[in-house]
Image 1: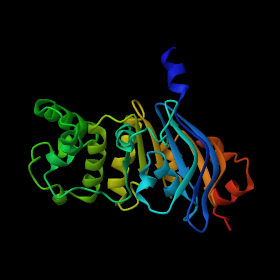
Image 2: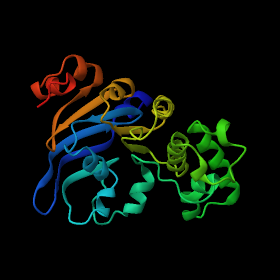
Image 3: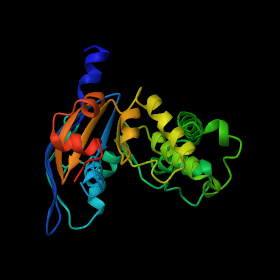
Image 4: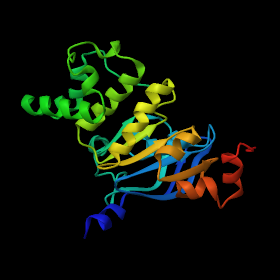
Length: 257
């Protein structure tokens, strides 16, 4: 198989996915494929199920009591919800960056090294990976000389990129972002957006965003969710300029509801 064919094959495949809370259905029968080395945007109004959906893709949904998942999420062909699959290994392969930076009260260096410590990585390798991860996250030039300083002293944008570096350090294949720039100022948000163009060279990137302009800028494909259902999915340019569904048209033109 050549590289182009390999990249077009789905890394993640969602098959008839539904999520139920005790009194209601949150997601309903969603099927979607995510190929390698691509950026996919997930858009939709508040409360449509975007965050629930992205949390199903690496079993972070397991941390919310009372939710039940039906259907399959396949990573390279294997259902991550199979009882024989370790969710810790799932999250190592499918990393996640949250809406607000989740830095730990420790040094910059130890934040990036955190997952590597859990994996009992040799210190010489840890140093190499920390530097590489900070470089890939666009931070090394800004903070490489002060790695011993507390991570909480960094700006909000730097903290978010530090979280990206920490996710990269454990060598995932898929990166999930849940509205990663919503709490950042425009300059910091732009720096995070610029990372997506770099990350897509080596990773499958999936980003939930409430910002339609952001989806148009960074995603090559976009999915529109409404009331827990997948309304439309396709190339971003086509979805924004020639949507097939009336709901999509109303949402992207601001005439929704």
